[in-house]
Length: 113
Image 1 (cartoon, rainbow, N blue to C red):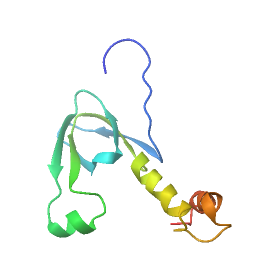
Image 2: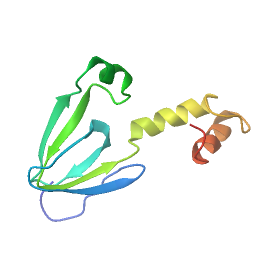
Image 3: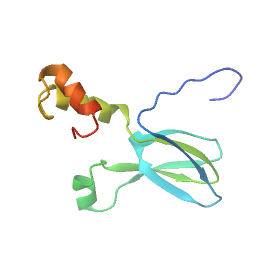
């Protein structure tokens, strides 16, 4: 984005601001990337190794960010939040009354995963 005005970004979980030094590389799940400054070099790479692809839990691709510049990442992308809500709403969490309310209670108490 360029220009004057306000911009709003949506992110979930913990937001981390990371300052990359010249030549420093950060590799993150593509869903965890929120924003980065224009001087950061951005690329998408295939995850190496069959075990990592299928059992790593992050998917087949990750974002490679090369400094210098500033990067913001999130710990809980919306897709993961939605899947946790649905899993708990359908009875995937511990029983605290059942239904949607019980599932949300499980998710919010921090130990329902």
